[in-house]
Length: 173
Image 1: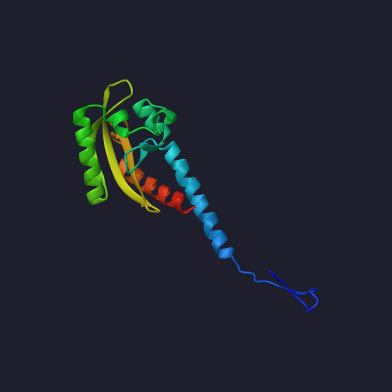
Image 2: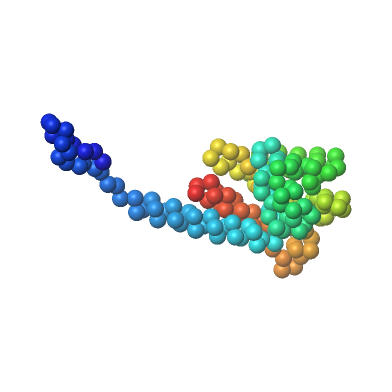
């Protein structure tokens, strides 16, 4: 708003502009609603969902990842994924190969093994999806152990799609 004054400096008029932002406000509210929905799905998902930055430093770790791998989220976030679940040279080489394949093809789906905090290996079905969110490269991984992939079990590829949607919405909000 502007105050227009007369020759003596006395305010004479107030001039302003108003813009209808109803549509933008409604769109932002819908993005927030969807973000909360997908975040809730990620938290209750039976799949271990791990998000990493381009350097493969863990930035997200859901409760199922804690249950499957034996690390609490605060123990995992900020650490390199190799130090958590790719603890042998063979696993690290396979992990690097999977990352490269995901970056080249847009998604990789593998049956593989990963290490738990106690050093035991677990057979998992894993989906890795690279994302570019506001110019920041992320890797998203969803994994299920054999006990959860059996007959009637959840498939991680569908869960990975939900996770991708959640992170895109999170970046927009």
